[in-house]
Length: 500
Ligand code: HEM
Image (cartoon, rainbow, N blue to C red; front, side, top):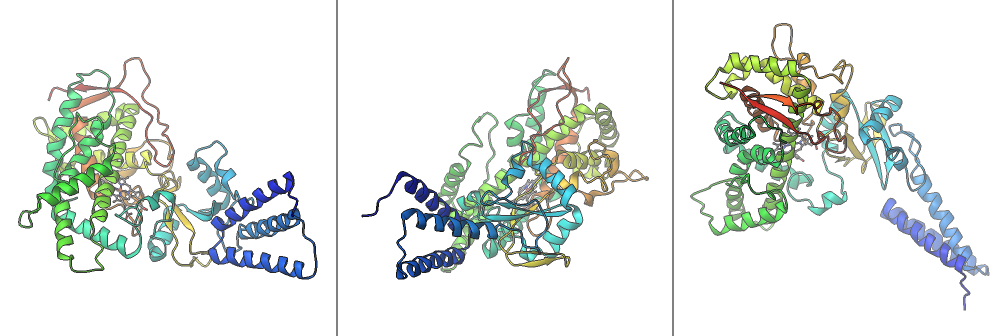
């Protein structure tokens, strides 16, 4: 009978924990080799007549596993540089020093250059900075860097929809969705009238405050996503429904069910119908990827990705215009000349309003709403500019923040200066310098729609109202939340209706 003391139990539990960590961190083949190696050692020991105590066994497990873990976490010389990782916890402490991740990445870039690596959990994470480096990794080597990592969030949807899917399924669902939405006018001029229809009740809602302080709350989200809702689901969100964005996925599931009941292939009403029709066509194909759960995820992806993003950029623009009244006045003057009284601005006015366009570009840059974009996964080893090997299985982060606040491209990047997008002849320039919509194969498919909406919403708002801070208060803070999404801090302001 083996006599196990309290210390043995503690060691045993610790060893089991280390084995568990090894199973997570190491490749399956590495873990199995390690376990077989340890078993052989003990077998040889027993065969030679050693009388192992429990603590001997446990301590050897600990030493072996620890060593393997530690060597595995050492940065190979061919990797991009970065801070030295500690065993098991890797570089987690570098992120947890109380600063925002974006600030940590800014200082690591200063120290290690445009491309650096970190060991985080079971992954090597490569952070990519600067427009040139981003292009090299996500455009030139896009065939190796366009998957999503199998993180928990992504696993929730198990390769379904667009945002969280990979490989051939992602390609097929993304291109099918974009091409079919275009047939409904998505991102095209013909879509303008439905955005303007949505704008009217929104402007009236602002007017109803009659110059009193108010916040741009979820009504803005509902308004900006409603034109997309019309072509995707065939319905709008009602402004008075406070919980419209709760339980979204259940709502879309029930919408798909409703559409199935009333489906008529000779009367295609919206994107859900288009997809249901494709499912019918592919019905006999056993390998079809057009399935109901995919459809629900695509609808959820489109509406989620299209809601918060455009609305947050509008909030940022208002924060910036409240802090820069001279810019607001200059923009309003341009709109008054180009549009005049009696009508709302339209896309046809765009070429007469370069300053307003510049204000929008600068708001996209300064607002920096997705500073770290979404993570990508490397699917094959590849060589970066003959300098580093980026290994298969690494997570790559497109650090879009590094473009928005790049001092060489945008001098005085912490200052809101729409003039940086206007050339000497007064024309719009430098549009391609921003990377707010990311780049490469995963580039945001909603960019054209978002830009149309930003133009129509912001110019109509500035045309119809004068925006002022709450009386006796400072303008809202220019500090954002700087988390994975950079939102402005909650704020109230006044919209004084103009006599037009
Ligand atoms: C100001 C507004 C917007 C900004 C700044 C923005 C930005 C982004 C960014 C940074 C990405 C990640 C790209 C990557 O993985 O590297 C993305 C992806 C995506 N966006 Fe947008 N977006 C905006 C509006 C929209 C709208 C209106 C839609 C509506 C259709 C949309 C749909 C999507 C989808 C479906 C993806 C996932 C693409 C994929 O994984 O293949 N976005 N967006």
